[in-house]
Structures are given as C-alpha cells and as structure tokens.
Figure (tube, rainbow, N blue to C red):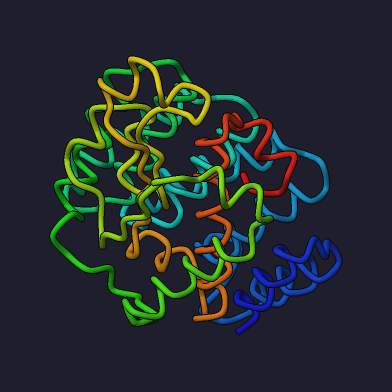
Length: 265
C-alpha cells in the first residue's frame, strides 16, 4: 500500500509524500532498503529532489539487480532518456528485448530511443517487431467504445469545424481501422502505434502532380491505439476529436510545431 501511495505522490510531484512512504516501505518486514519497492521510490525521491544523476545510479542498480522486472527496466530507460542518454537506453532495451522477444512495449521503447539517437535502421526494425506482435491481437485493456460511436464522434468533430474549413475539406475521407496496415511502416514516422495518420497531398497541392501520385487525401484513425492510451470512454471520445483535428491540420498544411501550439500535438 505504501508503495502505491508513494507512486501517487510522485505523479503529483509531492516530494514530502514520496519521502514519507519511502520511509514506511523501508521499515516493513517484507521491505527494507534492498527491496525493489524501496529502490523504485528512492530514485523517484532523488528525481524530485533535483538529483538526476543520483536517481540514475539507483535506477541502474535496481535494473541490474531486478533485470527480470520489466517495469524497472522501463523506468531506467525513462530516466536515461530524460537526461539525454538515448544510446544507453537503446543498448539496455535491445539486450532485454532479445530475452523478452514477445513484449511489444520493450521493442516500442527501443524504437523511440533509436529515433532519439538517430539510428533510423534500428528504429524501423524495432517498429516492425511491434507491428508483428500487435497487428492481429486486440489490446488486453479495451474500453469497448462501439465502432458506430467511434465513427459518430469523428463526424461530430468535423461538424464542429468552422464552415469555411468544412468547405475546404472537400473529398477528404476519414477511415477508421482497428490497427494500421503494414504499409504504414514504410513511411514516416512509421510508428505502428500512431493514433491517426494523414495520407495524400495537402490542400494547397491536391490539384497538382501530388494528387495523381498519392491519390485523394485520407485521414486514418486507429481504434486500438487510441483506446490503448485512455482510461475511460470519455477520454477515448476526447482523443478521437484531438486526433481528427491533428490530421486535418496536416491536410491544411500545419506541421507538428504548429499543431503543438494549438494543443493538438
């Protein structure tokens, strides 16, 4: 219980709360300073205390001692990425992924680390591993927003757009799929867990050669990926709207920085 409360305090940025529950874990008969729960709270306490290198040292020790615990390994990866060590993250995650080859989360984190380190070939290979493991299997945690409701929310989002923007959308098709097809991996960013994807020429170019080469503009929404990151049906509906607007933004010529400034990153 103290460990879970300590994690909650950490997520809230409550340093005194983390310290209180850390001390309690250290005094438990089944706890002590050498147990995983104590070490996991210890690095968080160091992190909130603005001591990232000390936090890293504790996380590395925990990952080495409890390498079988994937959460601990991923926590170490998060710290290393936060302080700018993507190559170290990649080495650790690839080593663990070779032992835990059926864990898509490890491959996915390795792909992100490879991207941060500029290793495009490794990123692509890791994303392909994720796709192979996930494309035919529904995620364990599903909120079961019906397909009809999912489509309805997307339509409602488009209907709320200003009239001049709705008119400019023309024949843009919104396509809902459970998970991306393999061809998505061949483009950029090639992320199999993308929530949505814009394909085709931007509005400013759709009457030119791009239209002939790429076909009409399409917006894809991926149900499983959207539901995977949400904790309630209401969150799913909110994320559908954000994703639709994000991809329509690409059609209108906005880049990722523009979308981030508009709260649609």
